[in-house]
Image (tube, rainbow, N blue to C red; front, side, top):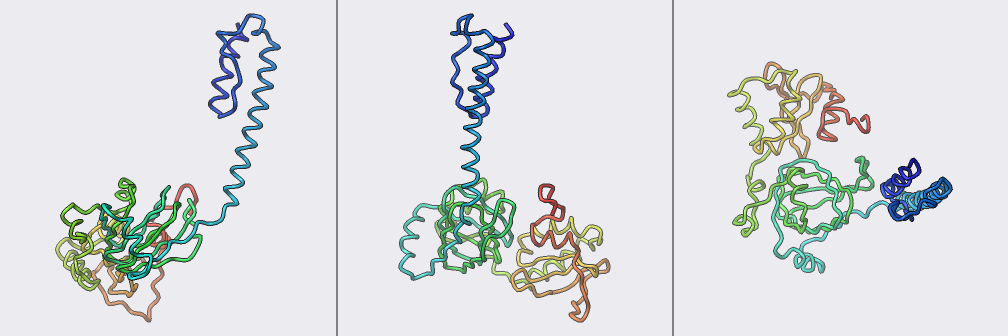
Length: 297
């Protein structure tokens, strides 16, 4: 009876590990076959199958590790010979818009897109976020081809693209919003045609602070993460926390427009040292003030 229980466990165990389970159902075995020798030989066979399966998996793993870095994204300029071919691939595809931000996308299939408005850079990265090549820059009017894999997108300006990407849920979680049909038919994006400059956004921010009250320095991180960086009327601005207050910068040129501290806005003094905090540097790089629990960085 103990042997029968063992035989019942083996097939399930082997199937769970992906091994080649070459066992006959216990219900079809004779009493003689259920004796210990049968169980023993079955265990030996299972062990050999598992070793073979592990070996094959190891070879596959090694081959993946040795695989060359993914190809960089490809820029196709307007008026080039390849543009019409790309535009043909975008027939009946959707329009998506995104404010300035950074996001890493992983796609199983290549993405083909046309940048209708905005400016982006795309860099191949590992699953842990390590950059594998140079940034490829796309300007308004450019088409692009992004091979399958992990790529970091930096939207330097409010951006709208027409894309064949079908990963609507992933796009949405990364900050993109699909345009309504009427806007899509017009080829225009609601998030990218505001026509505002960083100076416009800075004036809006100063009025917002005046109306809502000063932000305590201890609340700078929460204000940036949950309000300032998500406000579409501040999409041309970026923020950095230093020992002298919060720097408000043009997101594209990185020109400092002003400094916000516990008393209000002050002019930026280039003769002073503004030491950015480590948590702020992490926010600038990864969009998160906290240490990544997986990488410890």
